[in-house]
Amino acid sequence: MLKKFFIIAAVSVFFLTACQQNANVRPDDAPVVDHSGTANGSNPAAGGANSSGLPGGGVFKGDPLDNPASPLATRIIYFDYDSSEIKADFQDSILAHGKYLAEHPDAVITLNGHSDERGSREYNIGLGERRAQAVRRLLLFQGAADKQVKVVSYGEEKPVSDGHDETSYSQNRRVEIVYKR
Image 1 (cartoon, rainbow, N blue to C red):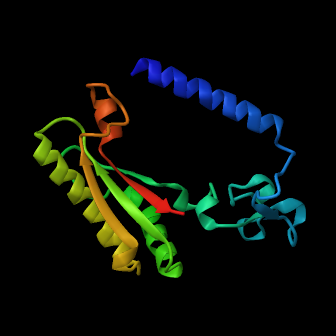
Image 2 (image 1 turned 60 degrees about the horizontal axis):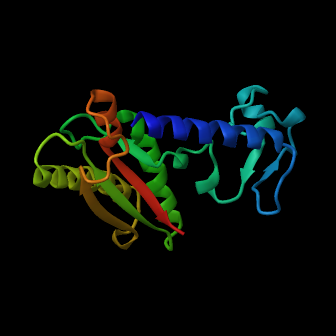
Image 3 (image 1 turned 60 degrees about the vertical axis):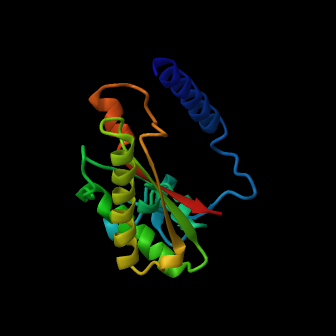
């Protein structure tokens, strides 16, 4: 577990360093940021402050799924112990995904439900299913079509963290939203 953490941390530092060095280089397929219509790229609705989360406060142009400042960027929903109740922190993101699916009828997602290792294998498969179904219901409420949302439960079988403490358990109690592209 600790070895995985250091590998992930090293890769993240390398990636961030590489991105920072190439910050002024934009590949042809990168999203375009529109800074027009505002003084120094700021958001006039926010009193000139940058509230977009994008460099210079520009408007993101491209697939909304690729916008890091969007609630659509949140693709992992975490749950409390032995619960399938959606936390308030994640409701806006789920609602945004539901709206996106309603506006993009060809988009298809899979909700992968997971649990921590506590409890029997059968119980955890059921708990992962209940968590994914809770997210699914909220997506459908926002206008997503039934055929756009698949549910799979892995229970405890695919942990993100192999530890046996509350920090590890909390990382494993999740639903992952996976878009088919």
